[in-house]
Amino acid sequence: MINAPEHIKTIKPYSPGKPVEELERELGITGSVKLASNENPAGPSPLAVKAMRESAASLNRYPDGSCYYLRDALSRKLRIRPGELIFGNGSNEIIELAVRTFLNPGDEVISAHPSFAVYSTIVQAARGENIIIPLKDMRHDLEAMASAITDRTKIIFIANPNNPTGTINTRAEMDSFMKRVPRNVLVVVDEAYHEYVTAADYADSMKYLRQGRDLLILRTFSKIYGLAGLRIGYGISKAGITAEMDKVRQPFNVNSPAQRAAVAALADAGHVEKTKRINERGKKYLYRELSGLKIKYVPTEANFIYMILRRNTAGRLYRALLKEGVIVRPAGPSGIRVTIGLPGENKKFIEALRKIIPA
Image 1 (spheres, rainbow, N blue to C red):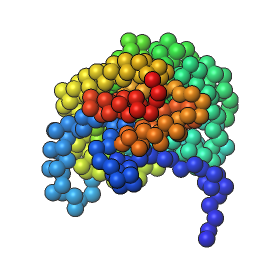
Image 2: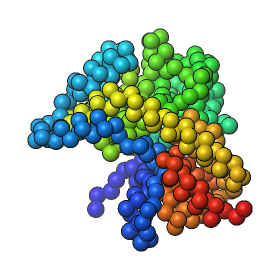
Image 3: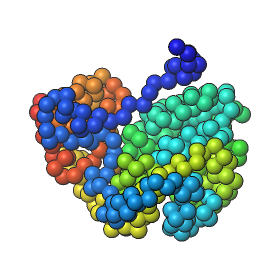
Image 4: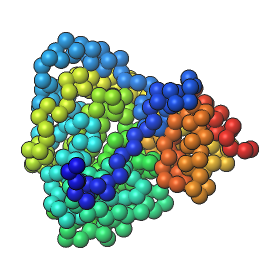
């Protein structure tokens, strides 16, 4: 068999959240809940579902490779030029497009740990060098990340809010950081969860674009818009940056139902507000119950909560919760990330915890 290069052989594949169907098939149980992948528990907007169904009659045709109608709707919503947008098969593809476009073998990319694992995987696949900076107080240590910049640094990834901790970096912190970043370094700000943020001092990344900085903002329809199964995300940047990335983008990378559903989802502000209310109520409930169980957690600005456990106990708790029909996400040896679900899902999770953890 042909051998893969060493930099590919040593990649640790991404492990997605366990599907409910798989768990129930393995254990012979029903009524399980999945709180592992930060999906919108309310589902997609009814308008998006209707638009997706209507698109089915034309599935014999290739999708619009330019995402014209979605590009028009988003550019008007964000008050930017259409050319400042690029679309992908989820925001993951935008990450890959940025790395493929701007990274040479041996170039350095700075990111944090723990954060979204896909950053370092894609960089390794492109033969770049990952410079990993540990979080400080569960947040990106922007001072340390700025200090790690060298003349080989090409890209910096910042998840804001961060996954898996749900924390943010403030406006003042980002302002200070951006002043230290050289003009020839691309700062990628991953804002997959930005619609959930309630903090008043959350950084306005669009401001740096207006200042002419080399910035790429990542956003997605997978989270608050509830379209994770359709895989559609987008990037916002200078038109010159998106044009270069567009050269390596595969044609027809965003399918027709996804484009139609995304346009409709943008028009349903009521569904977004409903989702926010569900999230805030669930957050308060889980805070209260976790505190009652004396489980440490990190206050979140996203739709998930990071639980801090005793050393090397995350795997054991994860497996115990599976037996109770609750799927969460292990986050290292001593952390669990749980998605904020519907009231019944949150209650099932807490009831399972009560059974597992002695009072």
